[in-house]
Length: 370
Image 1 (tube, helix red, strand yellow):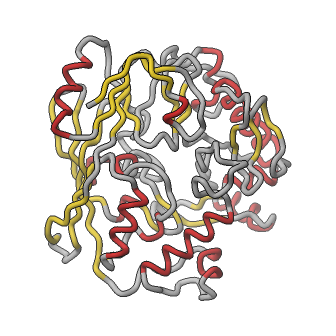
Image 2 (cartoon, rainbow, N blue to C red; image 1 turned 90 degrees about the vertical axis):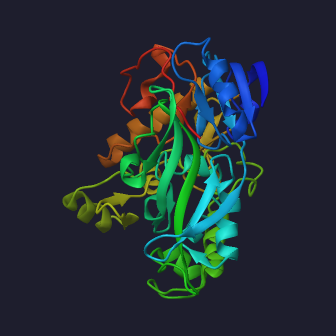
């Protein structure tokens, strides 16, 4: 484990902004985790966990609590579940993209639609990562974690993780640091049904068709690249966190109205109907590439926010607030940011935490993320 004091966190995130960490620990071997636990005893409260930094906005003043970067790697096939699915144990710091490739190479289905999503495996239960019809809740069996309240290692089954639409007991909480995860995947020549039109069209197949997991993954990756939702696919839009906002749930009446307006609506495993946040941004008049706040604009490829030279965390939160307000005024739908806010946030700059106009939040609020 490498420990650094006052390390700037901007370079550890895909947005490339934010202040320093009072203490930054880079953990590559889980056997060294007790050393990090001992290190934190000199600080009040729980530390913050950081993985690949692809869903994080760090406060301009940085973070006064210790920051742990999970860089542990490793995938093990550990047997079969009662239903015949293959059990796979993964270190929390392992890149999700690498895990998806590994499972596809082994002819396993359950994660192929998650290809191209940046970040670590440990981040996936935090907001029940999902895309194009698959979610982590479909395949998660259990996690091992360090409980900072009880100060001991615990094992939580999937039910105890409280997985919901882009949410879990871990989201917005610094109580747990995820260490390892176990997934159950099915050996199959064909992957999950293609439930999203864009992916089906990429394969020139009707919606509902099934293709080998590798073909489905290639199609998803092509769709994501066209939308600028793969890191490194667009140099101009490289400072990004991907989707900034949750796709908001809508009522049946709202769904009918939005459908008449040509909105992109999808049904999710929790039974909800949700409208695309990017469609709402477009409907509210945000043009591709248009500026929203100093150093922050809409991507050239997709309706999401990206950062340019001169951007700051305060400016990014301002841009979030502008989008939330205008979308609400133009569509009547309320957007909520899905990114994690890390560090010590001032009262006046925290309006975007809940997506509400200028209500503020407690000083020093910190969110944990993998």
